Length: 154
Image (tube, rainbow, N blue to C red; front, side, top):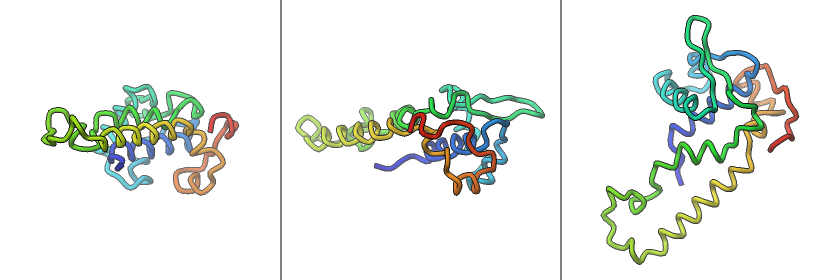
C-alpha cells in the first residue's frame, strides 16, 4: 500500500499545527519546514478545513490552526477520508478496471481486508500521540510544545 502525497502532506500540516498549537501558522511556514510547495499545501489545507480538522483565517493577520483538540484528531479517520477515493489496485477502480478475474479473484478480497486492517490500526493513533512529548519533532517544526496530557488518546 502506498500513501498518496496529499495524505502525507495532510499529516505534516496537522503535525505542524499541533507542534505550534496556540498560534496561527502560515502556509509559507509550513511549506518551508515541511519541504513542499505552497501550491500543494493550499489544496490540502482547504480540504482539511472542509473536513473540520483545520480552521483557516483569511486576511493580513490570518493563518491556520487546528479546529479540534489534538486528542480528538484520529489519524485513521484522516487517512480514511483522504485515501478512500484512491483505488488500491486496478480492480478497485470500477470505471477503469480491465481485469477479467474480478468475479473469481480471492486476492481482491484479501487486499480489501488488509486495507481495512491498516486503517483500523491507525484508528488507535491520535494527533496528540504523534506530537506530544516528541522533542525531535518540536525542534524540526516549532518550539511551542504540547499543552495537554500526551497519554489522553494515543
